[in-house]
Structures are given as structure tokens and as C-alpha cells.
Length: 201
Image (tube, rainbow, N blue to C red):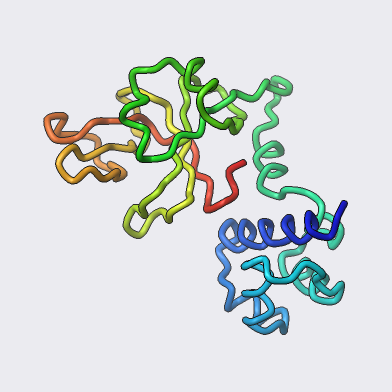
């Protein structure tokens, strides 16, 4: 594997592990003894050859393998491991990834058609009729630009959080309560899974 690929894996894994483990760049620096500049440069892709000692400190902090942090996709690995069921392995569902600004005009299209028009990610689970909504605006306090929401399209009576589109403001939000004013908002569907910034593919 080329150094560039290894440094890209390292960068993506650090971002994912920080978020998934509830850490911050500051806590990583404090505990590993690395400087904020070092971490910043890795996350911004400014260094291709990251020193072995630096990689070792980062992998030790997260309690993961020194070799794996540069060679595998931890998010993908953990999604697969958490979805292996007693019934045996499931085939992943192909999910078209649609930019936020294109979602409304895509709602009347079938998933099969959307899958030929947009890039795909995969979901391991029993849900169907899924789309991935790639956020182009942050959803206050919850999601950043670049986060991906896996959404089961259509309205349902489930108690899951729902992704809704406000027809007046033109913005997306997440509805936690249940009752929705359908004159003002359009329900995109139930949020099945959240994947954080830049780590959805």
C-alpha cells in the first residue's frame, strides 16, 4: 500500500475514532503527548510520511492495532462487525448517496433508478427503500456539513427520528417529537443510521 493511501486511511480513521469514541483532538494530544500542530497536519493531509512513533502513539491512545490504523477502514469494519446477526451474514443494501440540494427533486424516483444516477454506499441491516442524504448545511448542534444520514424513505408511524424538509426556509431538520405539520414540512423518512463527516464511503 502506498504511503499516500496509508496516510489517507490514518487521517480518516483518526476522524472516525475521535467521533465514535467521544474524544476530541485536545484529549488525543493531551494523552498521547503529540502536539496539536502534528494532529492538525495529519487531519488536513499535509503530511504523507507520518513517523512510526507518531502512528504508534495515536493507535495506543485509541487501543487499536498499529498496523490496522493505516491499512483498514475502521468505520466500515465496525459497521460490518456490529451487523453480523445470528441468522448469518446478510447481503448489504446498496444505498444511493444524494446531496441535500437534490433530495427533494429525487423523492418521486424509485431506488433502482436513483442507484444508477448517484454514488452508492452500503447498509447492513433489514431496512429497505433507503437513500443516503449527504448534508451540505449543518443541522444545528447535531450534524456537520459532510455527514451522511441513511434514511428509510417515506412516512411511517415508527418512533424513530425523522428527517424533514421545511418548504418555507428550504432547510432540513430532524424531528424528534412525532407530530409533523405536513403543510409546512415534507417528511423525507426515518433516520436509520448516521455516519460522520467524510466517512461514508
